[in-house]
Image (cartoon, rainbow, N blue to C red; front, side):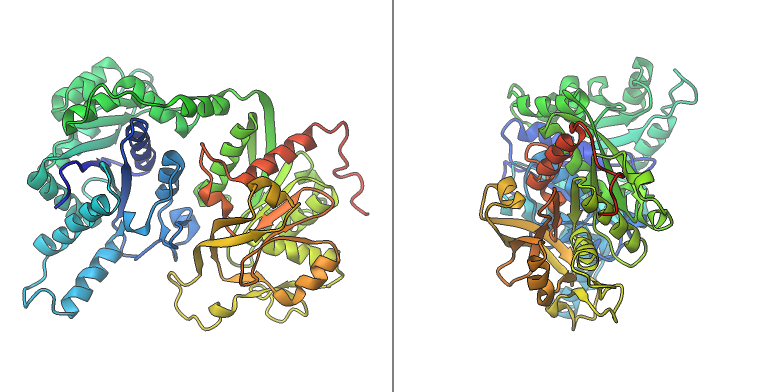
Length: 547
């Protein structure tokens, strides 16, 4: 049983997915945190995967990794970026985790001969889980986002558990995120929301607050209809309009009085003021930056699905705000770059080039071409995970004379395997949760870009990889000028740099710990370098590629 002070806010969808429940949940959590409450978010996903680790980015978007190595839904990145805090794996609940737990208990005989059922055993497990998150983290408020839409078969039992928890403790608020379409300008339709709310009511849940997404401001007539037909006071119907940046939503909801409604429902102090001054400043820099946009090219292999690189994109947004500059991101498909004879035609307009992570050999040579072009023309370069591995491959081939150098992930017979599988990975046969995952410490070399960025000798960043820079080739790479600026105590190369120009690449996914209030340090240095590059009187890009 939770402590008296722990409150629960449940965010459900309605008629369609993809409306931004994660952003709404994070925004509400930010308003509570800004008033001094300790908030812990939970995300429930109904799929039967234990975690997101084996899911294709084209189907599910980015796999986000927590400090403890748990591979989670990308909404966790949103939670951490808004709350500026690292979350534990216990905040992620999936159908796979729940059913695995139930079956394991049944096999151990923990149900004492009972027939194991959805109610009370599965719902009881869910209630115990969400309350434990509150207790273990001394939370004032636990935010629970229910993935999917109302009526989905895979989340029905979870919604039932929330109904039971509400009945047992009555310290909950239910928030429904819905969509109000417009058939034509000024003609908003509330009927889909009415039907979705009735479905939720048929499951025993009455929403306390309705948040409406729409393409035009919610009209007073629509607000009155939603209030009347959904049994929600007009002042508890909120507008979630199109915004310049997602980070603006907490300010928009604050202006509309979101906290007052939550306080009224949950018995929180209604007059507590929010400290959102710094947040307001940061958002202002995104909306109206002082300097002109920095043009950054992301050369990736999942560019058709931008959600595959959402943390990379957001880290660029954070770091651009940090240097008070605008931002223009271009997505360049690496496999298309392989077909281009003159890479300068594609890449010369940019002030910085970024190569993110990925798996498989598609587009690899295109990424290597982009890295080589960046190095030869002194365009600021930032590589992440695979981006450091291919930086080493390019350097080995074109500076160290190792013709055909490659990663054994792509060419098992290469004469120069400068990238090879981590020794502890070589006997692993299962795929799920078996990579080098989570936070590892890195020791930085003094007088390097990395050391300057972090202003520390030891840092901790998150990883998700099976391959590493082959230690057998490190002495020769260093002898020819490549700087190894960060290492794990085991010897694993964590960060590499070019000597002649700004080129930094990291084995860890440093984008995962970037937040609006605390941008990733190397991303900030990258944006500073891009700014300096843009401001040079003349650029050599494309002019002297032969040297």
